[in-house]
Image (cartoon, rainbow, N blue to C red; front, top):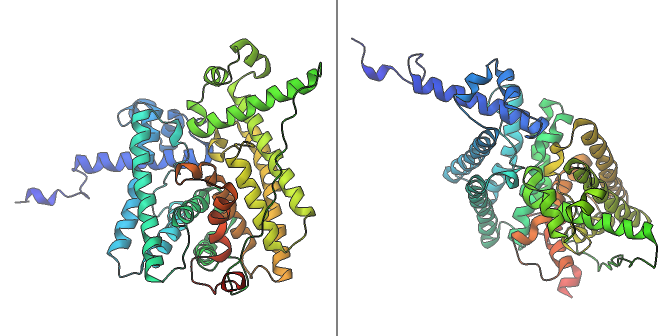
Length: 433
């Protein structure tokens, strides 16, 4: 006689196991589509079609796209914490745990591509969730952040890592890995494990070639003051109005996501009538596209300044990053967060991404100059650029994580990990003198 315990999770008669397996498959397919197309462009029909299901069958597991996005992000956060749980039980030092978590972001992507594991959604559109769902995901995200920061703080206290601003460093590390799902496709799958090791080596040892700590030079930032419209200069008046619309739109998109941002709310924030607002802005998609164009134009001007500046490749890289940070976190900004990029239709998204790649390629130029002048050690330039641009995108909400008294000082502390790394270095001559 067969005991009831033999009906285990692998049995075809275990209904709960079968239900859970189907739910996991749905969430994996949804995550794959969200990462590639974005949640706005993905429909429940797309998810059902990818699994060979009818839309009616899918409704048995999830009723709305909002619920599907929330469940995908919930799984993402559960996965992150399970990784940390395993690391906490392993015989590792705090810095080794931090490295294990960092490299797991690469490993998870690779496992999904090879079919050895499920796809996990990058939680880029948390701001678009309904308040209850958003609060639940943010709570788990903050808990993950604090656990990683705890590894860094323990490493600093034990002397395993050098002294640094751990909140900024943690935000930079998480930001550096936010977009691995987007650019790891550029590598052969066999290269991904080595890329993970090389990327963590950049975080550990930094880009600076010298054994002493790199010290940022003073940076003079002269913000272009907004010129008041002169007399009957209607063209200038129109430009100023558009600039105000784009800045406000960027702020709302960054804080509430594409779905959560409302043109009526933006018009009310600017204290203009809806008619006046819609005279300049046709629809929300056009506004988002214009916000991206504005941010790219600002970054291009910053790049041009760096290209003309004197100094080593590392100094140019540093100053460019700090100027962008300043534009993000001062009255010049904000700049658009790329978390909303998938809300654009494919042709416009490709146009923005191509322009962004062109602007970001300046980092490759500066890193290359640094290798030649001896300021940057021999690293994979593409990896260094991807890590830094991911961190730059994440720095747009740095004030939510720490107090900002001086923007440039905050920028120096934020990017310090990319130049000096986590491992101890010799004190700089300036510090010891």
